Image: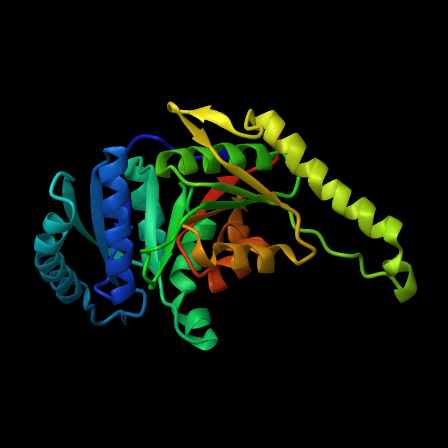
Length: 298
């Protein structure tokens, strides 16, 4: 199953960076559409403080000033959305996740830098760790323009959680009045006999399985072909590319309004690790990505 809340505020992690401003703007637009309040949280990172000296008071004061300066822009961007500034101190990932749970947030929004690969690997650490550890849905918004995008993309693999992922992606597509693209990517197995992988029967069987995965998931989710959605028609496109799943989703998301992926809930240190597909997608994703906490337990 997949867990996400339809109530509560939208919590936005904010540090004053361009990426954070892009994420906040995205969150404000979403809040206006779904009639949600927004809480903007600045975390004074004290994880590097020494025992004899702490910069927490100065950092929190800086955060308060930063949020006050941002208040005018948020009011102009979404005048009908109630926005509450909040400052906390501590380790950012832990504070963001704890505050989201305490507030009963429906969504936690964080920004992600889009520079070269090295910068993405280093500066995106917070967003990756938040997406892995949070108990609520997380939206990771890269520092890229969101205008001109269309379509909601969801990747599925036939696991039980795929049904809920499709349900949520379909709801997002209906809300945005955009096309739903359901993708089940497949690859050839790493067999010892290269000639064997060229057999048409093998490739046909694997592609047929991908088609069945999509058909069965859509049927179980109650999303088959075009369906009535809030008085309109939801257009659905299905795709079964011969490509690694992460690469297929990244390519599909280049022009999409939203990409929906799942992250399996774990305990202990595993809570701070994403699955390989979700991890690769978040490092390279070229657009807004919604990460949902999923579990395949019955």
